[in-house]
Length: 171
Image (cartoon, rainbow, N blue to C red; front, side):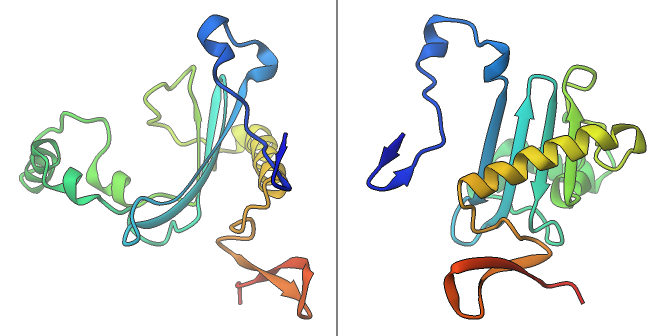
């Protein structure tokens, strides 16, 4: 569907209120850039019925924590337990919450709590590559300005704004 010259790639969720999804509806894409202006942490994701792939575009920085979450009793308990090496009531520790790898991939059937990141496992290479290709195609289709991140930046080639290309940031 096109509105005001812009192609919309999303699908209505209304049919799911009346019927079960079919297999062709089994893929969902997600995008987050920041929660607030000070909480910049762009992520892109693709999820199928069985797998979830997350691309953390700012993986070199700690994941930001919203102030209302930080001051909550839940997070304060997590902080206090972490400081005193007490068992946590959560399946993630603070380090894995703050520091995330560039890629995360989980088998939701075998690991519904998303504890085992398979993104760098040789046995999951084909699945990861397939999901990465799907994610990249979606980013192209939606003209995602972060398509080149984190190792490149989208720039007009030789000043031509109609010819955008990824320019490498790697040295």
